Image (cartoon, rainbow, N blue to C red; front, top):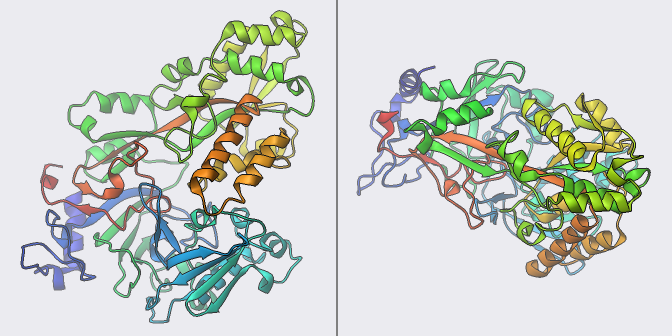
Length: 562
């Protein structure tokens, strides 16, 4: 829909009060929640953000993550939000603290909050929400995320009653969360804690979040419209009493299905959206050569790492020298200049530069590209010039063209440098994951993206007994030690960095690249969340991992030029 038609429709819907929007003495505007807009903000009727999102099924975190729709993070209130510097900020909880045992966390819930139906919103709602997520009858598809909460796994497995879950309300405004083991990263993990309304779930079932007439909100926005296959509209929630101070009056999500993705760039150029992600190298090249569009182009490193995972328990990769040979045979810089041009940066470790605790610069030489050293290690392992080395299959997880091309480039490098043959097999995702998690793959090119912004999210997956066939007792010991450090963030980061060095030196994986995200957004969209942060990144990560829609506004200057 052209922007002028969207704007005209919204003006009709809000003509009652928007026709003469409230003004401050200084000339600025006040939005429908009574929040003064910044001095350079456009009038409230123009405080609208339009973007695309996948047309999924529900708008409730504790029902589904993988079938969730954007907006679930805005119609209910989490315990904690995160700002663009990755600092934790109060939301439903005004403050939190951990007991000396490192296991018991207490959250002081903000007073005066209500659901949009007028019911009080307090600690009991969070207890209900966590219990709903752990209840095996809910079949929550991301229940694994909360396994550090005491008895979570046992409740999911029906070995404990739901009342045994380590989440309880001491009173209306005091929430207590107990963990299975010391987990200093718990507050970061609980930025994903958007509450579910008991009264709506009990009355309407899982479908409560799918229709405006049944949806109940405790967050800064409420569901105004959901037209399947067309759009979702969120509007400011007049009963919101949380800590955020949102400026936007409405968010419009244009819906699409993954199998038939729209042309994001033409839609952006046609003023049908304020934000677009670019997914092809050709698009990025075209935008970069456009004198206007390139000023709206932004790229940043995703907190995600592609790597070669190897079975170090059996076969050739049991020998560390073979793993070292593979690590030194791959020219990551060449990969990122060719197959991954504009969509990848070389990886030297698991934590990407810009992620809290990352030390890639210090680790860069360990798995550096060095063909002579690679050949020497392979010869020392008993395979001079690749003689006697078995033919290997390298499995991929349903990768697209760009990453398949990168895998084929790696295949060619291993042949050229080591004279070993690796066949690339791009497998359906479920087939891949079943084999990978059951430790039946000798070699795989795969990836992992952070779940929450803490080093544990990216390093904890390398603990023995988990997803990888690699084990290092010193690594395990160091991670466990880091997880006991509650009061000293610097000491905890030091231990994680020490553990990551062990991982890289022992070649628990051959680290390849970190994806680059490429985005366009309008220059009239203003938010501190879109400023360059203390880690040197400027990024649009979305509401779950960045305080975005609760701080963004539309600037009045220059909007008419787009």
